[in-house]
Amino acid sequence: MDAQKVLIISDWIYPFTPHTLVADATRMHILGMQDMGAEIRSFMPKWGPINERRNQLHEVIRLSGMNLIIDDTDHPLIIKVASLPGGRQQVYFIDNDDFFQNRQYIRDNEGNEYADNDERIIFFARGVLETVKKLRWTPDVIHCHGWLSALIPLYIKTAYKDEPAYRGTKVVSTVYNDTFKENLNPEFVNKLLIKDLDISQIGQFDSPINYSSLIRNSISFSDGVIFTQDQQDKQLVDFCTSLGRKTLSIDPEQNNAPEILNFYKSL
Image 1 (cartoon, one colour):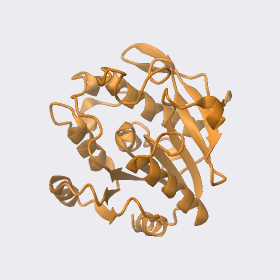
Image 2 (tube, rainbow, N blue to C red; image 1 turned 180 degrees about the vertical axis):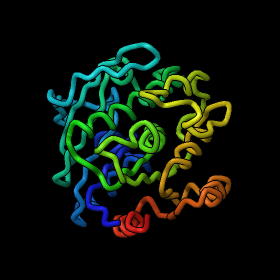
Image 3 (spheres, rainbow, N blue to C red; image 1 turned 135 degrees about the horizontal axis):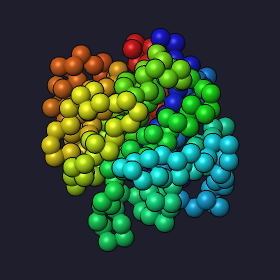
């Protein structure tokens, strides 16, 4: 496939968030793909610590205003945008007062993981997918970086598979080291059911639902999986092999855009 339109979804992107392996790798991914002529759209959460004035974020009114219902509660979707320094790329931010404003990343100021991290995952994934539909833009490939985008492959292959924006779209997941440690709410599986999605369609979530089970489910719905050299979990690699998924190993500290673009074309 000739992947010219790439949707990049990440938990963190430097310099909007501090230097981390994911943040730096995603930034290189965006700029590297741009230099190779790909058409890029990028999404990340509008985490509470992100300084909107310093990073020149502003709300995109035409994309905001939708309410996403999770566990019978309405959560307004707010979309903001800013330019990525060092390139001509805009980054879209998924925002909401309940899940991101005035809150830290995974853990609160006392170091406790947020009890609603399960709903944050659902809100972020649905927020991205609904916003891309509004952009009237059809990606050839969706590339997911990090745990917060782990539901994207499942939704693309099930609830959104008949949406014109995603027909024929391939999904790639990059696997990093563990990010959150606590188990998610046991009701997570029921909360993620949307549209006519049935529990029999969502694949396997090992109990308890933790980082490992979330990533395994993400892999099972991905067309290709990229492992960073710091994350070579043999069980996950063997799991990919058992499913017949194509895999690629990269050094996340290097610009891997040519290698990744060739990986897209192989799917």
